[in-house]
Image: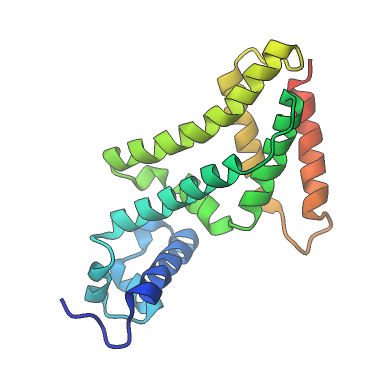
Length: 195
């Protein structure tokens, strides 16, 4: 299949991903056609298939990219010397990382229902890898006597859900700065598991 005149793989592929992300976040995966994505990018609908086999592959690519970026960024965060240090680092990291990626967060959490079973398993595996980072911190804090949590796995999922929820209401031009929000949420997380 011939490439559309003026399109270049190095620029068109990222534009397709960005357009799909924007449209999936705004309208929902089910309501967005490949034709709509192509129109947003400014290419013929058939040209999209030079870059992705289908819409499902595009969704999986976006979700995998988000989760891999999240895991890689967390691995680069200094976690301090104690479980309390690590929990604070995780809390602040999660809020800050997600605050600049509202579309990625929305698609990664709200469009899980549209993944085919084998794709869901891949994304769910990456999500579990991330949840286990926090669960490990909580278990370490329990072992040192710093934290109390009857169900560390459930606690870690609850904390992540709470932190991710910041994206539903936080605005850069709002009354609270991102630093303020991090501090408030850190206080809530700390109190939730404090021994």
